[in-house]
Length: 313
Image (cartoon, rainbow, N blue to C red; front, side):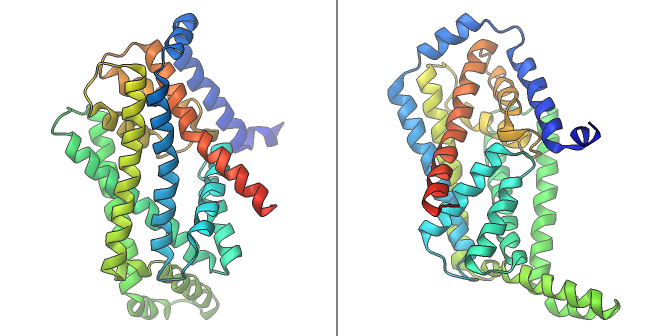
């Protein structure tokens, strides 16, 4: 019994159920079903199309992050990315990113630290893109104080992350001097990990790769905006077009700390909250959140399962 209480899955399930209860509280299920039945299928299919574009854009970004370290075929990168996100859907706490990093290291004979460095760069570029979105939207939408605090936290985290990665990439000599103050056995291991990690950051030394990674980061966010925009049209919500960006920002900030498997519960609460700023009724907002969440995870489950079968893992 004690082992169950210490399990992340157990607490993840408890949190998911709690958030789902909050989401479904005071919701008319008949109205929910009617709202789902009124969805315009042509806009839903367009949303699904752009949902499949997101892993493609992010896979290409990952490829260009890794290119200076090792050139890996797009198909290999895409399959590993989808497999990692399938794990992320099933398990909480960024398990998928860890799994993806280990699979890349094993399949491509890369140092684990180099593989982890590529994931770290993804996070930093996603953070920068999200920060840019928040700045642009702030001219049209007055964010509440708690979201502004989230923006400041994100800005500080991204700045510290960039500074740390820049230091590792450009100051290996300084690090070599500092390590002399520690025992040889310790410094030898640290030096090995540090060197491998800095190898994974080589794209930061290439302006070409920085531009390409930035472009694919923007493309992935634009694809997400397209998904939400077409889904808003599918539900025929009479709200501003830029509301799609607000919904994405709130979801992204609430998903920064993954607590539940596949963000079940957390996603619904975030979507209801985002749509409440535009006076969308809770029942309609929940139905929108359920469909958006399904679109968000089904492509990864489908593609991940497909590559799992093809790879015979």
